[in-house]
Image (cartoon, rainbow, N blue to C red; front, side):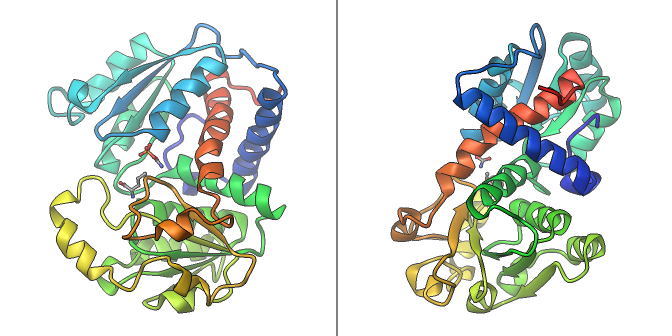
Length: 308
Ligand code: CP
Ligand code: NVA
């Protein structure tokens, strides 16, 4: 494992090892222990877009493991490749640091960085995917249900980067994925085909939120307006009417259902305040697990070892 760009690039066994290490490191740190396996190592964090969770959890994870992180904000680097080509940036960073994590608009920028970097490159969200988020989400589901295989995850909203990573995550771990979107915002056929090739019958796509959630163990949603889509905001809000996760929709889901959202949440749009504040809502467990998963990821990629 050199880079971490997409869930689909890894076997279930490799992904399971990462989840297992995340859980072991979480226990270790909660009980006051430390694993300073990255002493002296430096991570460069490149952001073309803003961030709260990803930035802070990666920075804390590096510090926890004995290393340091350098934050390059959108104003510092702008769009990667604009001032100088991504292939040059990748080789310059490789002379200074031990790992690069990047949040980009184009997924191809990450691929190009990874192609030229001599050090690991981590996807901290692109327009195409958000794999670190979904690995933390799977860890959260595992903690709440005690298993992943055989569960049903319903996603209601935009067929976006998070929805796409969820499709691959569900396929790799044996969850059924029922996604409801307006037609214009459907998850692309390529992703559905690939997820169903990894595991047949993983993805079921519908235009009816009620159809998606009826047998769900988890109902997941994300913003209707992702970073970079701000100019489409009004149209999107109009187009997504009927796709809100609210108590009326959840009345048609099983009583044990858990609610998830990668955050930031826009209350009154894709989710109501009432649902976001309900006991069944596990959004802050998800946010916390970003830290635990990324500790495991950084340890694996930058120290080359998963032993504790
Ligand atoms: N969920 C997530 O990635 O949050 P940030 O955009 O705040 O990093
Ligand atoms: N889909 C959202 C996720 C934010 C974490 C976006 O890309 O803005």
